[in-house]
Image (tube, rainbow, N blue to C red):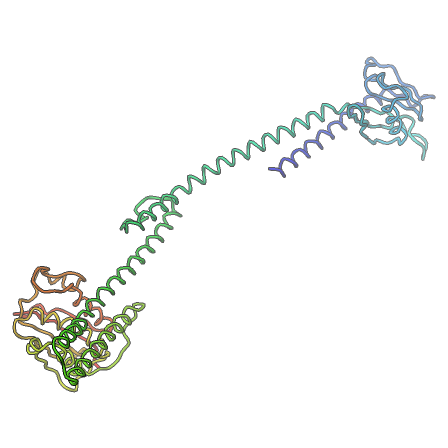
Length: 428
């Protein structure tokens, strides 16, 4: 606005100056028609309107003053300025700074001999007060207009930006509120401008990823607590048994060995689950013998439960996963089978087309037909008040670990009585 105001007023002042000069030259040309340069001496012809000669006009003939305004005597400063212009004998203009600014322009009349000044010179004057007043008025008007435009621009910009940012403030308040109450609402549910809709969609995707990470962390925590519960129970049982009565050195060493084995089992559980959870990567391939893993799982069971389990497996059978992963896949299924079995649990493993298959079957009540669709959903149990402990995490964990190694866990629906689960894993 400053640049525009300065440029506008510069143009206006230049235009007014040109108008003043044009007015002076027009008047000088009119006066020049009354000057007779053909006579000797030069004379001024009488005209019907002598008032033109009396209005700020000087006529010089060869430096001799023929006419001058009544308001400017011959010796006045204004007349001397006009005489200076007449001396040059050209169409120059100058500004006289007196009480009021006066613009003077000269006009030669008649041609003299070569190299000599003109026969006569007409000098006209014009008071610039009105022009300067007009320029000052335009300056004040432009400043007022610029100020008004700036004020209106500020108000409109503030209003427009406020209205444009209102949805952003709403989204900010929503995000703050949702973060405090863990809401399932999303930004894309509300109609917004295109740019904010795209931003809302991006934020919704970010919220979904964050929620997925939180669910993954919660699932990992539940799975760790579920898997660590068994070795912790073994440690507590060994300590209670060891403290119940004095033990011999051999008994103490055996207790220490069993505690160390339970601790190693806990470390293996943590390593296996954390490796599987890290970046969602597939489980690194490996090779393990199936019979040693199955026998080790059975040997860790209490005596009454160990008697229920029968293992059928070729000694040379190997599987294309690590022993720790195979143990973590089989362990939840074996715990479930022992939890619901009446008298026996059968573990059978064999090599078939497509890989190694391990089946764990029990003679318990089986899985209700209505619950088979929810069998592998985390936290779901067929009957929470059936008198058995459990969090509903073992089967989902076993399937997830098996699938991370390229295998699967499925429920054998047609198996009756009891329940049967089949683990499929790559062959070693």
